[in-house]
Amino acid sequence: MTVLPEGYHIRRAEAGDYAGVIETLKVLTTVGDVTEREFAERIAYWKTVKVPVPARGKRPVGMGEILAYNPMVITDEAGRVVATGNIIIEAKLIHHCGLVGHIEDIAVASDQQGKRLGMLLINTLTEIGRNAGCYKIILDCDPQNADFYKKCGFSQAGLEMQHRFRSESKP
Image (cartoon, rainbow, N blue to C red):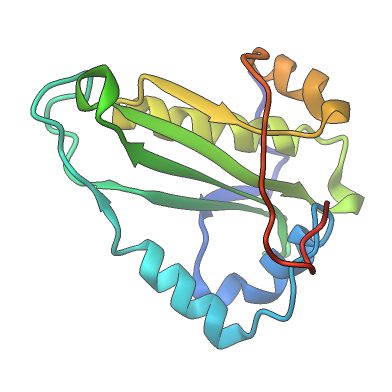
């Protein structure tokens, strides 16, 4: 099992992580002009969105409320955000009103790559989904990243399709 380097920590993202999360996400894609206030409002909103408790299903007894958005960060020994990712829990009608986890926005700072932080982040997000009672966890990735996600236990299961609307979005 892979462990965090000494002095590194993994935790839920907080409003004070603004600069580190935004900078880390730039490794992944175009972030845009997100203000500190917008970031704090989004983090606060994510803390309020709960997944409805299914009438039946795999959800462990005594689990309590499940948050739909679960943004996580890894910080280094100086407290700097060096990796970030999110698992969004979706309440479905299919599979007896089951839950599906969507892993999104996985990014590791360029100077931190090769330390297995991405794998640790994926494993943590996967465990959040498993503990929530998700019947599956899915993600989309660039073909060049497929081998990494296979090492994390994922397998190819389809083809991603998209319809973009904003011109500033990365193709």
